[in-house]
Length: 346
Ligand code: UDP
Ligand code: MG
Image (cartoon, rainbow, N blue to C red):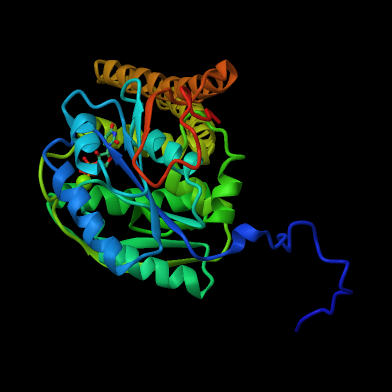
């Protein structure tokens, strides 16, 4: 049953103002690149071919995340004379999530599609996302059905992670979706207010809400070069995601601590009974050393958990810029906004 509202009594935020930016005409592509010299030509070639079929794509933000190879130089050469390209170079490697964040900060189009440089996020799926957006959705994410070029173990850990994340964070995050997604202008406007130092992009966009939908697709293997996400970076991303969305690990430490102390009191009672009531000696004290190690390890582990939350607080308090832009280069036809030495940090 619906309750009738007088027209001026809706809850705050229930109706966003219709701004001119609610137009659904132009689309930006946001592509982070790190040491991708092997595929700059293929990437720009594919984007150009795709633009011929989708004229909505008017802005292409290529964010070079501090590559040490020829990526930026090659991009400059390849995009010369082409319309709509903005090349941003970070002063060093700040990480994929911050490269994507910079793209979201800088995009001026009515919507933006975040995609990987290695074309693992196929452009034809981006086209379907644009169609969905025109139907009225604000976020259209890609759901990975098949994952090309990933081992069984990687696939499995990714599946488990998305499920754990959803459970612990309480955020209605889509399962098996990476950062490949379209976001509307109002999502990008809301994004500006999220000033976290280590943004977990897919989680934050899910957290923002709006009308979200997904498109299933098979993820092919990367077109050229090798993965820039070694397992350490992948693990860090997963831990960042969890720590920024959930305090559950801290609560887990408290609960586990309580269970263990209750257990040790029970153990003590048992020891006293065997000694003074039953009169039997307890053998196997050597095994105690392992118990000692076990609890020592557990304590260190949770001290680490607490420490990692503290480190996040420390990072936020320092309030440094999230990334530093070294160069902005706009190709012909995209010079509405003059370049700046340091991009919007927040
Ligand atoms: N990337 C980045 N900064 C990094 C690592 C990766 O901008 O520090 C980019 C990379 O160039 C690619 C995207 O992030 O466009 C995804 O990386 P990759 O394809 O290596 O990850 P995978 O598909 O193996 O998970
Ligand atoms: Mg990839």
